[in-house]
Figure 1: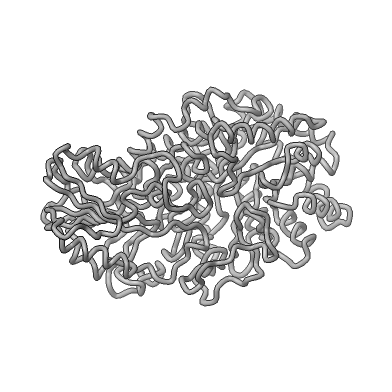
Figure 2: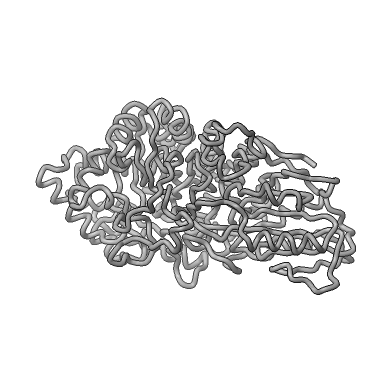
Length: 620
């Protein structure tokens, strides 16, 4: 039984009933209406009235596509305005609103932000990830958003990749188990109240196998941009290509089909079986052929061989990469098996081009009908026709204490203890003095990372939550003198038995996070050295989206904790640092000794073992 069919049965509709309803709607639709259903537009490029005029099938908020001011109430009002316009069309086909809720409803100020996937991979807790899916679904529905572009089921092979933190692990089986768990939670298949949203397995397929390229991405190649309208180049300009930006992301996976299937396809099968009704194609290529034009992988393998009867959506403006001729871009993508196109800006151009392609025979009417049939079937399976606007009372639970407790639990279970000399951890609550250093110790934005309120994320008090320092202060004894310095420049006489240093990567997303070197920066090393000289035991917390090269600094460190990108509930760190809960996290990736052991193929070929193997983690 397919995932779509099972979802329909749960909602009391037989396959035959759904098929009749879809056929009835399809028989009444004009080409204009069908083209509109296949169109996804970003929210700042369209007005509600235009949704009705052009029969738009989907609107999305890209990273940072937030209302002003950014509140849950304003989010709901924005989404509902678009939905009400869709319901005014001749056939009253509801639209489906999409967002990148990749670690909670992470665009909304006040929503709970969970650890990024790499941290959940360290937890290895299927039940926890299912519950995270449930909480995320409820917070999405509070704003009447019905589609999240998650889970990411990439299997990263190169830690230099800026999307490494989007992957649960380098272990394909673990990725499949946790991706399926999130899909179940999101789709309501493990939810008592039946609340559900569309899960979307991405980015199909083998984006995690893209190889490092010595030259940066071509300046005229469209990439995912911000939610602002595109400039002449239609791409974000990398700030410093010497760092390695855009050297892996959107690249080429050079591997045989057996490896693609075994390592990279398997997690998609698991997520689809668990309820994911949508799949997003990848910007990347397989052996030189772009995935968005790859008929074999999209249609022959995913749809025909695996029986996927949901819809395939593009990534942001991704079809523009296929050909200099835009009509060829549209034709190649749709003929390959794409069903809905994330335009995301000039929707009029896409619709007119699609209609022209059909009239000229570049795209068959049957292919259009198949795409629209899939879109309608997914909307029916989701229950959008019955309840296109979600229950407003759900707003009361957005960011609530119960949801934050799930995130706090996720933080606790994601922490990995890599070193603990002289039983430096757990800490005593009754320390006379505790030195705390590092900007990330008291910065919500840094601990959340990319895809948090904005696309790239940013430092500062970007949303509601608890910082590491706040959690420490709330847990330690009232008699403990906690002295904090962001840069470790304490007063001359400041000394303590224990010092804590939080080291961090600056927030990033996608190709902006590609890095040639994952070593600690000179500034981070200097911070370690400053605090090392003022304490007897040095505890280091790594706030990071991937393993860092830290071999040379290890002798300075008594206890090393990888906190990944923990999200808004960093009091979960204090729970473990002070011994209220044990360390249980295990590395989801092997930890290299040096850059010579990156990528994974280099590590496997290395004569030396990694610093720590995948699965390593101390309990005390």
